[in-house]
Length: 148
Image (cartoon, rainbow, N blue to C red; front, side, top):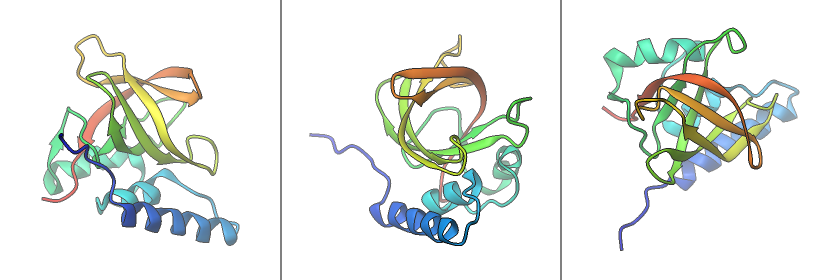
């Protein structure tokens, strides 16, 4: 039986401890530090800058892998972009992500994402905003793989 890749439990524990520490100080929980803590991808700056920064520093892909950072493009409704970490693959066109601040100041674990791109290339996705409810279509730049 093939083992399903998963986020390292210590990484998840560390990322959640950092969220708790921020909230206890009354600080905001953002997607960038959460994704950095969970994935180990050491990129700084707004989420919209992660994809261009990753080109020189990390392996990148248009195919999701567990543990990779999904880099969302900046949009009118999301001008700083967004980053999330792939936590599971559930088929060719569906995966789960762990991320912060999709719902203001909250962490969402195991949120479903479906690929709605015409080319089946993960360039356009819909995110499960509430259980069973998928929201707007969002553009995705690609996936940043941890480690070089």
